[in-house]
Image 1: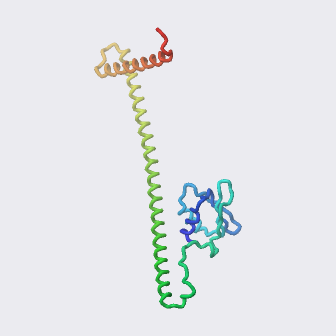
Image 2 (image 1 turned 180 degrees about the vertical axis):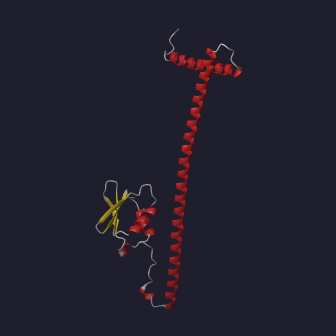
Image 3 (image 1 turned 90 degrees about the vertical axis):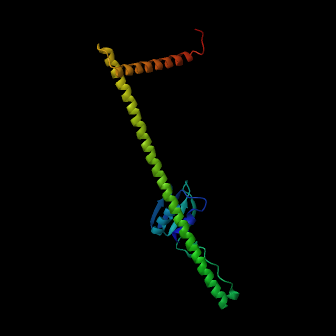
Length: 205
């Protein structure tokens, strides 16, 4: 069985949750989750097990196959010509030409589809990597912005405290910062009072 044959067999419904491979006395299992069936088929073909079993999530066997058996060869072979015309040279020539075309089309189709699957897998892996980097960048940006805002409020609090303790007249920038901080504190206090009054459900004053 070729990797292409294995892939087609693996992708037949119902799909397997695990793949069990038997090679002599050694038994191993593969988890196809998160991997493409093309890569799973390549790995199985490299191991060359004697028995392949597809298991459901509960451990029951869905189907099994022995890749070495001739009846398990899944390639679409061209049908033989009828017995009546086997001895006709012209028919033999046409049959041979048809077989060559069949093999050429089968090979080109398999190769083209395998390349297409590989391309889609690469695009998917690249998209996943880009999304992961964007999430990390966005998290870092939000963390930096939060730290900058907290630092700005801390400096404003320090400036207000210094302005209230200093007898000398403060500069215009310090006065502006103090005014802004006082206004912000007053706005927060008013919003808190409104929320508190709203909990009273419109009781008369």
